[in-house]
Image 1 (cartoon, rainbow, N blue to C red):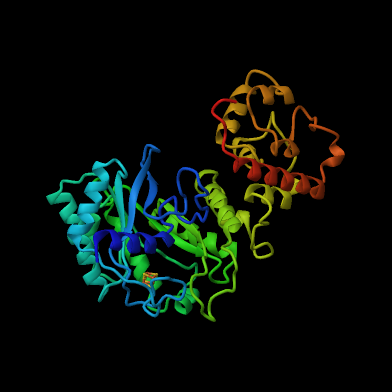
Image 2: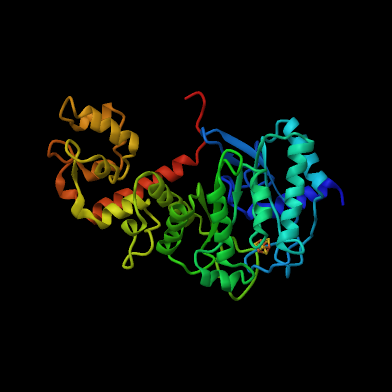
Length: 403
Ligand code: SF4
């Protein structure tokens, strides 16, 4: 088999792993430039926010495990291939020299056993670093169950490691990925957390959870994310809408991946990481799932109408952050401007504060933006859903350079 044939098989097999930032698109090329569904290149972000293109491949799609949801499971009859370490180096260096990529995202099915697979990953990345003097970004997948000594070796060679938790609860893992054990995945995360420094996984660790492949609620999914962020200092939890690629009675009967739900979970995850929200603040047993039609902050606000409208001239920073449409930058602008003047609606507009959603939840000097009779949950909800639809539709349109 040629390297090109292997590359086709092993970049295609890698596309279901969302633990880098650009996976999961199913939008096909319709005759123009570019192709978001084409596999092979993914992206990550450096600590200064720079976007880095990565060659995304599997070392092999052969696997001794039989995870129900996975295209590469051993019981599937698919074309298999294995890259030799030198072949991966050759592709990476050639692509790098042509400016196609800036780094490598290397994952693998489990070949023979976890230790053997990790040894092969280490051999490949050692070659890249030592023989080819490749100093670019490398994100590797750690193989659960491999020896801690191998994990430490790998961690010293790469920028980021990830171990995919795959499913939000151990019960679902037992059912759909019976060869995987939550404790082995946690053990990797613990080692990475305890050893992380300038030389050992300087870009930290991440994980992936499949959404909609098992019955867990948003509360359980985000609860798991919160636990992982707090306990193991994860940089990111990536949510990957379940894509039906196998037939199995244990799998849900979904026609299309739950992409909207995936998007809502990313929005909620952002609230956890940057807005100081806690999961049990966003959701509870009575409301364990987000309203898919609203962004999670608006959904929460509508369930807590008693907290609104907030007086823009008095509300504390974190209360302003709870207003749908107000982010940290707008909240800071409001707080610094109101030191000098009492803010009116026009002042907010002049300051560039987006009021599309915020206007329903604010007062300026005691005044609502319109007749306060519309401050009713059902009216605001209908307007917000409409806004969301309009912004989703318009954001799909390519902006013109010349308008
Ligand atoms: S371990 Fe499971 S998810 Fe990973 S490649 Fe093998 S079958 Fe697929």
